[in-house]
Length: 306
Ligand SMILES: [Zn+2]
Image (cartoon, rainbow, N blue to C red; front, side):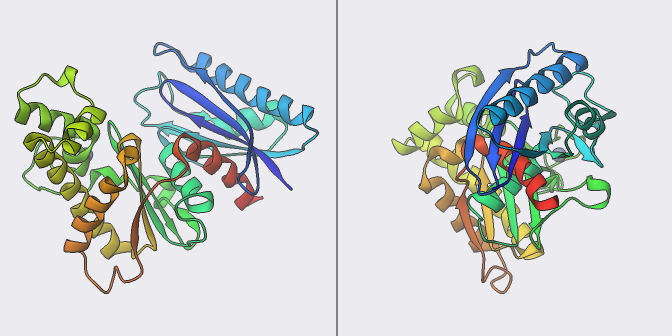
């Protein structure tokens, strides 16, 4: 059995795990990254995380063959080029070079949403599939495309910004500088804003969990908001299905854990817009790996490439 280190770097934590090729997690933990942490602090926290996993592998008498790394931002050739807005100074860093020198192991890096999607494709909701689309619905909307069993990232891995497809060409402004993007309508933040407007409540008093609870009680504002929210997602997913004809569309992110009803609503919407020939072999499913998707997917970068 082969083993790898899986690193999942986020805006507040670095998660890390010792992963077997079969997808078992033998050890995992996380270290906090302060909101004010500078580039060198983040780099040394990640270094500490990798060291802890390798130490644990040593204690268990297991040989680590490499380090897989999911990082926010645009990542190509082991280098994070930029675009990670929630990490200070996180640009133009050759992560692969840096950590392979420090630990004497191969280091493969990809974008964080990409590795989460890969994790679900290899070990989770789309296990056994060669073609899948992954969407994570949170404060923003990210995603990944797995085509022919590989991550697809476009030229120099700069694509697959699944949250930034247009669903209303004259729509509201998006964080990306565009207009009418899926993220501006269907992120958890957008949902909270829509519910605040309908219910007359203050944004700060609401979270996704609250809206789901009110939806389940049958409250009109919550029902309308959830129907609209899942319909936005369904519209965009129909476009992804028509383009990629995936075997699975996987919905992840905190709100996807609200229950099967949430996935069912999105699926019903998507299938009401999709082209039947394109969707014949497609299912829409919830993610199954939760918070472990990133570390598992990062480790699978190593197992797939080495
Ligand atoms: Zn956008």
